[in-house]
Length: 209
Image (tube, rainbow, N blue to C red; front, side):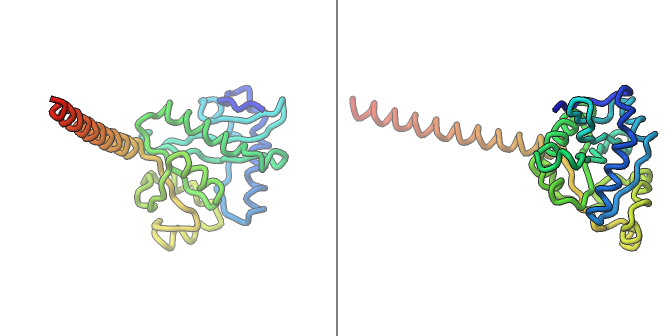
């Protein structure tokens, strides 16, 4: 099994990718925006997708979308072929596309909306946090993509405030702040420990003298 950045040589898998995504949505009984083969191929040609292959057999896929002038990034269309499910492949694909997204768009907020509990768990492990829809991109092109979802009427009735999907986001700035705060706390703890040791050493020297 290999997971690689897709390119135009993988265009032959576009149709089975679209079919697998659509059939999976039907089985789960959840809504999902439809993709065309042309759209998937376009992502491959731009290097904005990853594909998993077992030899020459299609195993899984996920692609990158950008919104609001690259300020927001979504890892979309995550799918694993039925023959390769329940093997942890979805998590591996998600990790690869997530790291690829971070490399290509280091300052972007990476988000996703999903009804799948497994995807939510993977996102959380990667550092995503649940967010309200108001924190997601306001790019109309993104929300237009929801029109083919069978739950689109819920989204419109709530004025895009909520739907059956859950919004999750990885914010690099928030992550940076947490890291800096943790480092600051570690520095304070180290200084405190150092002061305690110095005090104990001073008392020991004083007693010996």
